[in-house]
Image (tube, rainbow, N blue to C red; front, side, top):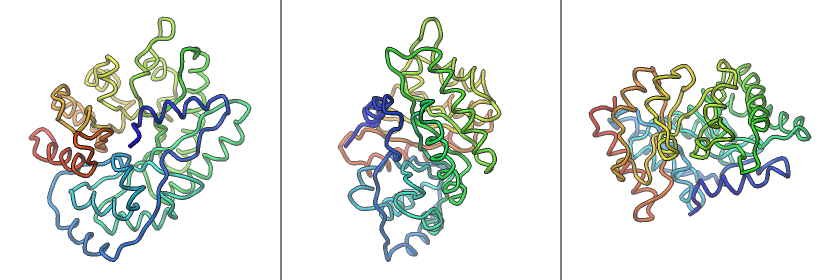
Length: 304
């Protein structure tokens, strides 16, 4: 199992080379004769509108293929998905329309995608051509959001470097808007470090175009970095469109995350799309951990 935080750190080390690997997660596709039965079961399933970032089941994708992963997510009760695998026009190795049908046949929908590129002025035309193709694929998939879930930051990063990335994100946001897709950025905890007297996260929020770049808040990483998720949602309601509900391991297991006020503020902000993400597993069993997270939220009276 590869910890996502370590994975992203490794990716950021490739900044000097301009581009990072074009996909955030290797995947393999697969078909199953049980698709129709699983879809009928998912359609009949009761439960709340709970989303899942498919990175949570990344090992299962590699071992059993995306079809089995989707069937497992539908059986658990998840209804809204965010992808974590894009490469050269394919979603988890499949044509976007094929992947979309696979998801829809199981009674779910895919509303968001994680993908991205590192940026440098020297590679600008290549990076933008990559985004053009990615936007075409995700427009076919029918997502509402395309989210870059990392950016390279190290001890040598300057405010000018951050400003370059803000301008880069703005440009991508203009491109996705033309396809009626919103472009966003997903945080970790390093954005809560300072460069000089500037908190990185606040600098990013202040220097992107709010009409073309939104933020997908990862509530665990905000709190882990020393920020207050509720305060950010309350003070900057227009800049957050989607949320990652996350804990140290399974949702609710650590006892350190107070999810009720987060959900209360999310609903006050009219945020409709949020996704469970599980990066680590208590018993090294991703399916069990992702199911436990669903059950915790489905039983919570503050979750609609």
